[in-house]
Amino acid sequence: MTHSQSKMKAVWSWQRPVALVLIFNLCFRTSFQLAELQVCRICSGTVLNGTTVGQFCSESAGRIDGRCCWRNDTASDTERIIGLDLSNCSLTHVDDLQEASTVVIIDLSLNPIVNMSDTAFQGFSKLNFMVLPQDTVCPGGNTSWEKVEVKEGNRFCEGQKNMCNQTGHMSIDCPENSLCAPYGPGFFECSCADRHHGYKCLREGQFPALQVFGPLAASTVVMSLLLWVTQRRKAKSL
Image (cartoon, rainbow, N blue to C red):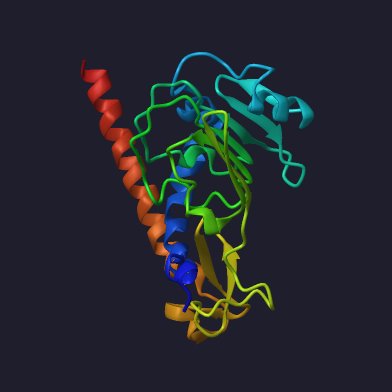
């Protein structure tokens, strides 16, 4: 295994079906979820037309909201964040920007960043261009990008590399019966191939989603109703 391969980190997607349990709760928040996104309000101001993100947003026919650039996803016709401008926001740490995991471009320049988490951009598979302070290393290291350049006091990370083996999209770090896919700078994920599921994709056949998540979803509904009734009674007693 090469030095660059040893720096890669895999995310086993067969564990991800557990997250489906949360879908029911997310349905309650869908109507106002976009309004609650905090990443667009991390600092004051808005994306300016002359900036790197502003130009990209204009060329992409996007919509500016605070520090974010939004655009309709042509596949689902829902809005998603494609640009994030957090330049000159006095940020010293970067560790949680998951609300903007669909971005294509991020500007973090003019910030006194002293620490950037290794997993801050995990899942940012569409990220293709970053502007960072000169002394801040590109996420995943230089080997995770096609081009890294330092100029005018900034570091530019361009062209996120695919961490998977390009021949057949299989990774030496993924188990048998699984496929590899990019999962952010320096990351990849292993997902079970068709008709395989379970630990290390060793089980064959359709995943029994109804039998596994049906009881969990039912219990979630019951708990939500109990909490709603309890809170309603408290409100009436006030």
